[in-house]
Length: 405
Ligand code: KDG
Ligand code: MG
Picture 1 (spheres, helix red, strand yellow):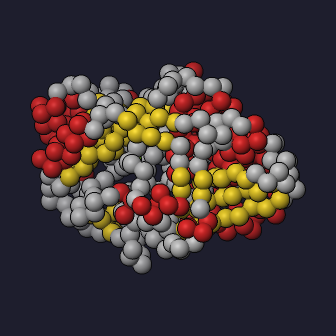
Picture 2: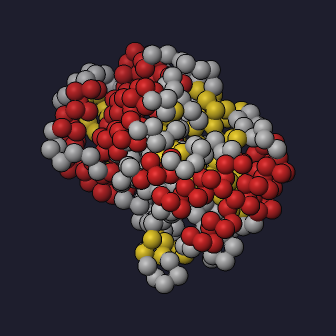
Picture 3: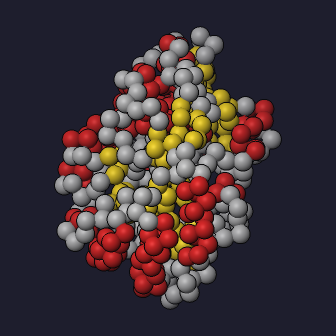
């Protein structure tokens, strides 16, 4: 099965996605997601200029060798641009192997470890009341686990709150430069425990609750928050601090029993090695699209399992349906799977461009048995929605200091 061509698409069906299509001499093609929010065209250039010429004529069955060739062969290892490009190629090759064998990817990984995939939804709001109303709506839709984010009183805007937007998929900024958002740690730390206290008062202990700090704290501040949230027993507290310095998580761990999750910006198993070995985290949140594709995620899951760390792949709106499908196949197989983040399937434009193998029902995703990843991509339809440059926001403190977003 020789690779005859690789096409790379950047489109914006409500938000930007980078799609890789690998064509072969069998007539079959594979699809991969190479979307890196806010830096899409850097990945497109890497794929077009540096990867594509090396792969034409290669055997598409050689997934492992191609992964090693692109990783070790670049000499310049890791980094989000390189790894997102490799991830797109890797997913497309797994998709192809599934199509040529007639099997869904989870079968190639070793078969199903479970019949359905537990997800957590997002409830957010401009006030505690609004957030809890939205939590109630998700409970009514059958969700067993929900992430709570709420506008912080006294701050103009807060991470994870939709404000006037109705849908996550509309969230991409249309401003020409990164929007700036305020941050105040004291206001945040004084407020967040009351959100969870009221959630438990209103909805009891059956529903699993989660929260994303989005890397805004120092380790000792995160330890304080973890302790304050202990009475409300979260499933996990996400991204309490950035993890460039993996030992930061030991500081948090030494002070609190609130379970910890991190990993959505990880490019490699090396980003998580010390976190896992020192048992500083409970859930690894790396994503197939940003962490080396299915080949790399499989290795990370196996390594994490030795330390009783479970997987909880990042599932934001800025991963395409191809990336979400890759997670679903991994989640069906990974023995130490924890939970999948899920924000819905996107709007009308997206569903015209991508078809996918997933169905939501009562707090779980169900995956069908289509060969490969089970996703298709309509190039004709996609061409109606050209890429639009867009940036993630930046954070500043009240005095103007640039802070972690
Ligand atoms: O592109 C950045 C988003 O993917 C990220 O902000 C979403 O933190 C996020 C999450 O947990 O989904
Ligand atoms: Mg997050």
